[in-house]
Image (cartoon, rainbow, N blue to C red):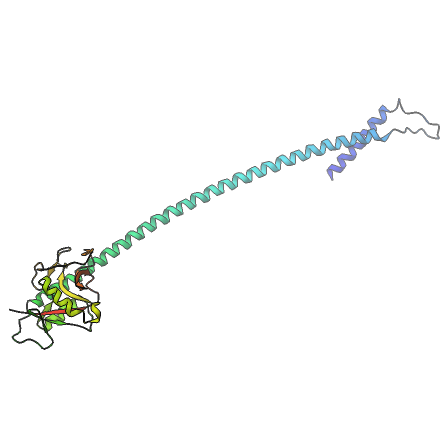
Length: 269
């Protein structure tokens, strides 16, 4: 509204000024009243130019103001993005730190679980060692034992148990888990085992390293076994593989909790 009022004000002023200048050039006409007719084109051109100048000036001010607002918004946006990045980085750092702590806790838990398992196995082995000393040689050969070579053995062909259970079952029969004495005895036993499911089963032996990791001994004697024939890449000497079993005529270390068949050797004088 103010722009229109300003426009008409300029028109009236222009007309007034131009009318003054036109007094000397305006031809007088013979009429009832004097009337000065002036060409309107120059007046309109003046008004148009003045209006454009005013409009351009106002428009430039508005554009500059808009640019300032945009620059301010862009600055605020950058500041916000920077803050978000800082927060994001902090969250990532805290997450990584927390993940590391969780991983460390899990490692500790696994280590504690391993120690607890070792303790349990050590206690069981200690009890079996005491039990082994009570096994007395029999005067008569039990019917379930068969002679292989010069000794008598019981071969469990059906029921699979863990190493501790196998040891205890042998003790109850007046025997111990098998400790192979020589290559010849191993060959004789291996020949006998071929008839049991094509020799594909594993059989527990008396040998273990429960007392001292990496040092394999016989539970019955507490001494190093007289004969060892390890499978390729064995023993692995892993903290959780403490008991030895026979597979295909070769020895392997494994978890004492695994379920295998077993061989007992009759106690002798």
